[in-house]
Length: 325
Figure 1 (tube, rainbow, N blue to C red):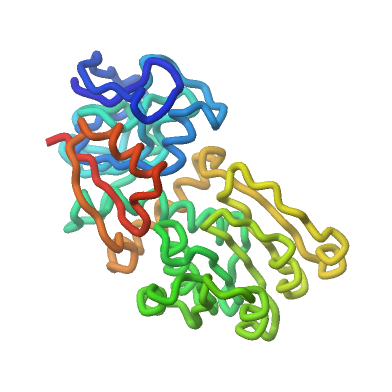
Figure 2 (cartoon, rainbow, N blue to C red; figure 1 turned 60 degrees about the horizontal axis):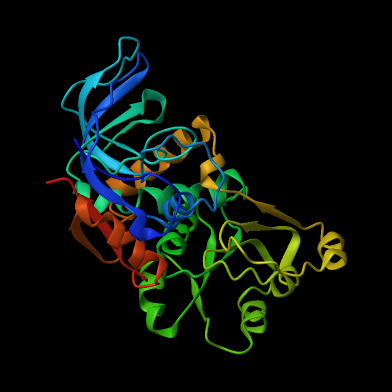
């Protein structure tokens, strides 16, 4: 089979494209004919070695796929050959990745795709949607009526956060460029604060007079000095981006507000947490609320180029689907 893979950790151009042996499913695995995959920033972290996770070389890159069931292991029930399915947790933790014509997926990490969806569109929002759910609900304790601030709300993960939070009945305050205000409001934001302003914390304070219950920074700026002062009593800051940031934490102000700061990485999510997120993602996919703002398709052979574009900042607001056809 053809696959995009690396023989050692390195830059985007270290990704090779060529023939590798087809995977064989174990008793608890499903073999999937991959239709489309994609590339996320977390894929670049794993490819480069920035995130410590077990891999076996040659290592197929990529975590997300949409495809059809080709075969099931002897102990697998609930999946039938030909069904369209998806996964968003390959390519780390000792599992080979999704950027191949065929992939072996543990059955507990595989989910059915709702009928009638475009695979190339769906694959681009699986990671952002699950990340949004894990950050807001699993680690943030999101509840209806909460005031939620999303930094980087027009980006891929930020937009998914606005959608998830609004669907849960939260009041969402988006921080984004003025040109993206209409887009953020269309996703469900109740207010939009100009991220280019010199006084973003002050503007957020005016937009959130009762304080912020949940603060998430999908842009990875991680201005904790400004964020802590915005928190309502027992407000929470969730860190999920900005791998190399080293912000200053106003510890005294945080604890007198009964506030907290938690961090999470989707690569650490449990199977049960991923399955719960997948159920929510499927619901948002089915009703059309979770969708890419803009996407384009490249052949699987262009995986290295997709990684390069990601790291060069050329895909802001856009998603790329990598097709095996």
